Structure formats: structure tokens, C-alpha cells
Image 1 (cartoon, rainbow, N blue to C red):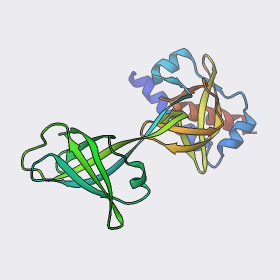
Image 2 (image 1 turned 180 degrees about the horizontal axis):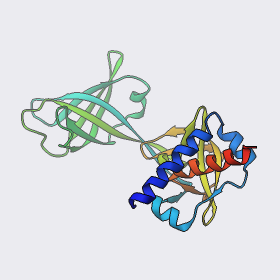
Image 3 (image 1 turned 90 degrees about the horizontal axis):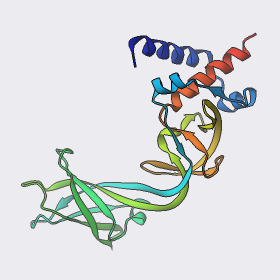
Length: 222
């Protein structure tokens, strides 16, 4: 994006946020039901990306830390609820030395054991870890199920409301308030407000939102 385009875009966002201060998303949706339009050249400048609301696996990662055994194969950590209830033997994990996240090692959950009011998790490295390192950060991948979901980047939070922008046709986008459930690492469950196959703005949703508010504020000005 050139300097002039970047400056214009920054001015647009700043103006939009100023004019729209204090106006809720539901009010915008009510007063301007047809949403906003974005030209093809603007979409290119913004690298606008649209993806489907679809039923897909939603994953959350349980993060903890533990110590490796003298043999350098098993890392043991302890979890409390609700995280403990999500972890099961066989789940994928990745581990990092506490002092260096640049060194990542693949692992799997070997055992999950209730022990003295806590849950002990043993994670087995799939390859030798780093020499002379005893403490590791652990990230365990847990599958929460197949759910109607959208990319996390698509969701705009305004107060208690969560909003996405739906592409109704090429260049035209409408705000839609949604009800969400489980927030995963990449996708968030949608309980209400979207249908399978709806085309939702992911990258660029902030700028679409700013454009929409700018136009809504301009229409409301006497």
C-alpha cells in the first residue's frame, strides 16, 4: 500500500471512530440496514479476506508448565479444573524450554492421573529435548467438537456485543450481531446470528466496521 493510500486509510479510521463515539452496533444496524460498500480497489488495498461460517473442529489449548524426568523423556505437570477435565491420554502437545520458545518439541499426553486432589499429566516427548533443561512450558491441543464457527479475526467486540460483517454481494457488507460459545485458538463457536455458508469478513473487518460507522454517523448528522 502506498504512502498516500495509507494516509487516507488512517484518516478514514480516525474520523470514523470520532464520529461514531458512543453509538452501539445495534443502533448502527437498525439505522443503516443495508450496510456499507467497499470498492474493488479499496478491497485490494486492505487485503480484504472473506471466509465461510462453517461447521469445523474447534480446538482450545491447555497451557501449563512442568519438570522433565532424569531420563529426559517424560514431563510432569499438574492441572486444576476446568482445564483438567479437557485433557486425555493421546492428545497432541508441544513443549518449549521455559527460557526459550524458539526451541519447540512435539509430544503427546501419555497419562492423566488423579492424585491427592489434583490431576497429574505426564507428557512424553517424541524426540530428545534440550540438553540440561529441566523446566518446560506445555501446550496441549484439546478438541472441543465440530461446531458452526468463524475465524477469531472476524469478530469485533463492542461492549457486550459481538459483531461480524457478512458479504451479501461483491463489495457490499452488512453488520450482524452474533451469539458466541467456545472460543478456540483459531475459531469461535457461533450459537446464533449466522448460517452455514455465510461469507464473513475476516482480515479487514476493522476497516469495514470503521467505514460503516462513518457512513452511519454522517447520515445521523442534521
